[in-house]
Image (cartoon, each protein chain N blue to C red):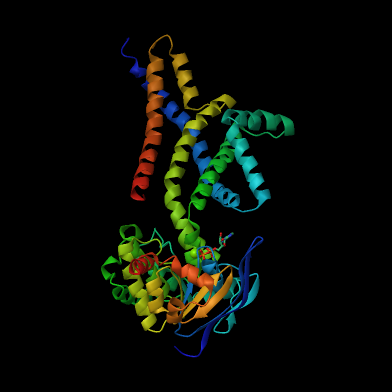
Length: 224
Length: 257
Ligand SMILES: Nc1ncnc2c1ncn2[C@@H]1O[C@H](COP(=O)(O)OP(=O)(O)O)[C@@H](O)[C@H]1O
Ligand SMILES: [Mg+2]
């Protein structure tokens, strides 16, 4: 029975296994995003403090996280830290930590950008109307940064979903790894399996990220 | 104009770093009085107004509003600022709020008035400046002159006792200057206490009860508008007025020939 080979996707639990594999990275991304957003907001506010010491600290953190490939960070967290301190971090926890560190840096930079884009005069007119600092921040600054930040945060989420596929390299069985296993197991019966499996993975990623990107586009248009 | 002193500046010194911008300013504004502050660019006019409502902290001297000192510490300054409206050159309305919400935000959140009360007053004020039909519009849909009129209304809705205007027409296209100045003239007629910085000389002459001429951080001349424009005492005031008098000089020359 040599058809197109697409049947390989539906043999046994194959398709379900692919979905489970995707869920592994989606779950890591979502947890990392949920942690990164509040931490990033705090970090972004921290970065706008006009103090040479806090500025230096945040600059070093941001640059380190940005210069290092995420893969190196993953290796450091999973192999390095585990060896050095004898902590037994699971691969999942290491991944969440690394992607949260990364997401916090990226989110922080977005928040900083949004905050400094608010002209000084917006603060002045809020104060001139008798608002205190908290009121000016809450009623004038935050709403204006939100409309800038929501689309950017959504884009960060899709980047996160794509980048977390790196966790395969610290031994986490995510969707690509599952795909590889399916291809290897069916190499003989289905020579075209690779095409279908990777095609399906492409589609799954697309289905996971596309609605998110569309949402970002719509919000961006709506709030221009 | 009454005798009651509304705003009193005594010995005001303001420095930015090593630069002394205001060097001992004494100025008294009575209730219902309109004081116009003139002076060359960079002489510290904006800084003076910003000190008057605590946006800048003075290095020395005192500023009293109704006998209460304006210093930039916490709770008290926000209460004092509710009595001093200020309008800036760049009509910084809040872009995320429509016109009526721009105007009622501070009355509701700061003064804790009811939304209904604030909106009623806002609508009355908008009608007075001819912008009733714009109340649901967003700032980006308004012209510069309209935005500036809304900014004035927004300040007035706090029921201030004093209004500060810092070159409110300087960023406007010429054909929109008039509509904003008319609003200010009407305010003056109704007895609002005002301190105005402007480069519109004819307007200054028409609206002012008193002209204060600032140069190098000091008040170098303080007199009535007629006296200032026809018979300035100091050379610096003469030089300053000359920069606004191209046409006049040319016609004088023509007559002489
Ligand atoms: N925040 C500030 N920091 C440093 N210098 C300032 C600041 N604000 C104003 N200045 C300086 O103070 C001087 C007076 O400014 P300003 O009051 O804006 O003048 P004007 O309104 O009369 O044109 C200028 O030389 C300006 O560069
Ligand atoms: Mg100025």
